[in-house]
Image (cartoon, rainbow, N blue to C red):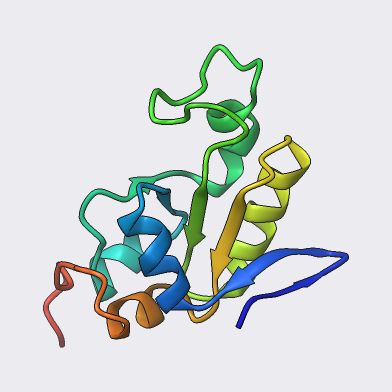
Length: 125
């Protein structure tokens, strides 16, 4: 079930995210390197620094990432939880990305929903 509040960009389930990804949406991973190394990654996801949303996604930015096609692009943002993905997706919305959403449950939910992932890099202690 999707939800949205005044302060939060649309929050979708991992199953809904999987459908958007299969349909060609840009998947954006805003977790830290440590987070990806300890829990795993989604092959093909665009890894970005949460602090560079204006540079990497700004419609007029000279540094805008090549994978970013325009403000009408469907973008699915995930982190380890909504605490990381929500603010990033909200910033995208403020930049004019009307189709930016984020995933309830983050990476663990995507993995559990069957989105292809790779294992952790860090060996357990």
